[in-house]
Length: 171
Image 1 (cartoon, rainbow, N blue to C red):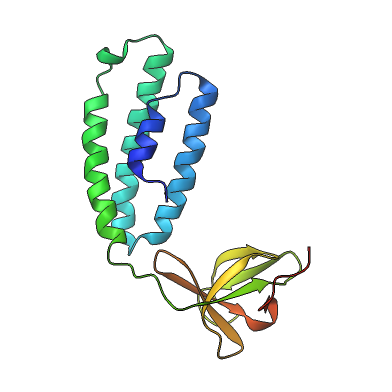
Image 2: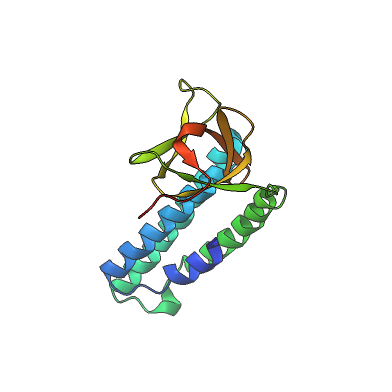
């Protein structure tokens, strides 16, 4: 997974609006993956505030570069680097205790279009993710009508058995 340090390097590189857009898209994709790993609401709000601050610092930095301000005269770079270092320490604490489940069995989605991954083994539970037809699932329990699948960062969900197959669909 791309870390914040790599995003930091990417953030200071854009010289055009198009390059900034690519960076922001990468940042939000990374942020979405991080959100799935957060252990609880308090941490989620805390980290959201830090991430917004850092993103704002990056946007200000790039705007100043595009406006022609010399790199060594941009005031927010040192502050942003300190915030990124603190965030990286926090991020390591979040992911370090999360075990990766093993062993698992790979099953494939055979639903027409997509298969929902539910929070619990019932259709009235909240949907955690959607998996496209043909996509592989890491199933850690295939003993019943609902399969328990691991989707990463300590997050599990349930998919109806009839929407999966041990062999990938043709195509």
